[in-house]
Image 1 (tube, rainbow, N blue to C red):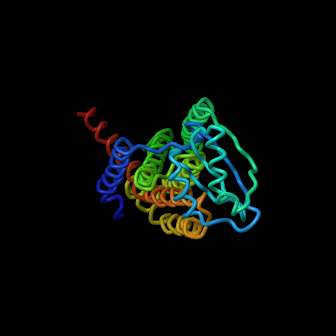
Image 2 (tube, rainbow, N blue to C red):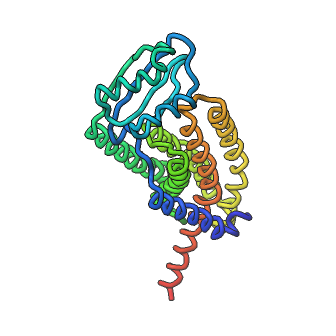
Image 3 (cartoon, rainbow, N blue to C red):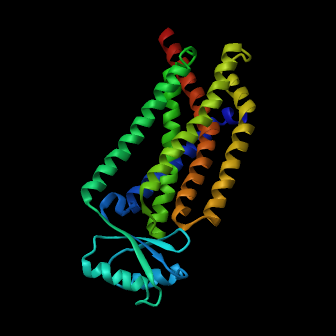
Length: 303
């Protein structure tokens, strides 16, 4: 099949995109939201018509209180994320939001998130990603336990996790650009997006791996590379159609959904796109590459 024949090109494309994403992460970094670094979270609800968000954003940024994030909530409310505020600064923000009483509002909640809470959330997020990756390796190794030749079952799990790292690294690279040029901050939705990408992407990879397993069991082709190529031919249309359906929904959420979930939807869209790419153009070619490396190693031993 074309993909297996030119596997080194597709693997090279993936490697290049991952390297660029890592460089972007180190050069630009990520703007961390108050969920991780601590700050103040205020929620207000207007008794009348909610003012225009753009004009409020402009006014709030002239107060000299640092970066302030304004997110619509409900029909008439806003959630305001900012650094820790004094009582005077808190009152000033409320006065600005109400245009000095011209737009009456009700403060529904005001919470201060300390740095210690942010550090705890960061460590839990990292732990969750690590545990999910380990669980995926164990699951795939168990599911493919009867597949020992020509590639061991645990290697299927390792390759699946490598593709998952690819699927997460590239959307994170995209997010670093948004963070640098658009000021988008990393919050809990970012972690949810990463975990969702892991789940969606691995399911696509497992479907193709399962088809490879069935074809190996039935011995339909002469070589392992031919078996993988046939399995891809049987699976790629289904994978692409399924992913396109999800991507269309996510794009609808991005263009027509609330501002608070806009970049969450964009990151999931990138994750779905590159997850589908990796399942077809990376995971299976890597299996063939591992098998070819094993054959070369065995031939050297015989010599």
